[in-house]
Length: 293
Image 1 (tube, rainbow, N blue to C red):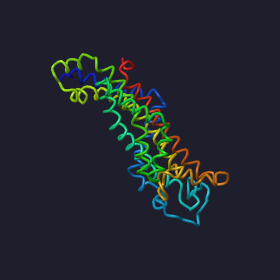
Image 2: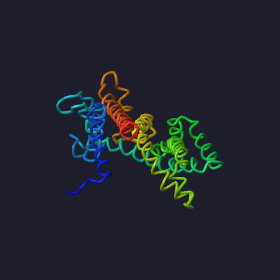
Image 3: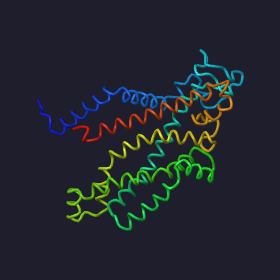
Image 4: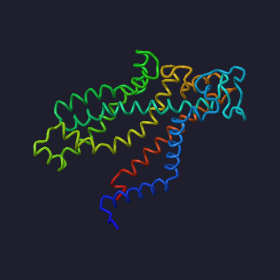
């Protein structure tokens, strides 16, 4: 029989540890199941929705304001569209926005943070002063200002949120880089003449993946909430697209009588944000070497 190497044994132990952490924590298992469900709905939503054409925006006025029933499990909205179908079809928008925003924020913020932390001096001061300038404004307020200036749309909303989000990754990666640049493997690479850019790309950034991954997972939920807030204000996704925040906004005028129009999309936002936050906490426990030991 082939003997396992030490790296294979370590990977097997870490896999068993990961499974054990998830199974022992009901909240972690709940978050994983919710996110798995969201991914399935994002991929196959138009085929799983009871009324896919209504989910995409087709009106059905004779059934407007119908309460939850066998025909419409979560009720119908002010235009007679099935709330459940619109929530299911809207999952793709709900996951697309945070995915693009987080990727843009990491792509801009992580290299700048690594450069600032490794180089120090005037480079660090310049990058961090620009970062502080962006952080001086509340993220959502800055995003609202940008979208109001360039025009409301989902694309503009994602770009605006990304512009207000990258400084957090810059500060995060800078802090990790400062602790890494004095490590022996970085000093060894520097002593044999490896260029600074190569050290940052091959030695610094790969060792920043764990905190970036944890922060990005938590930010997924936060960006869902931010994008929904912009849509609620009329600055994000435009009708008839099934954005959860837009659905909450459209139903706020009928909240006292037709409560289901806003309540169920609001619950979808709440559960999604909660799931990503719980998953981020679980990843932090799994990826933290001190917890593993």
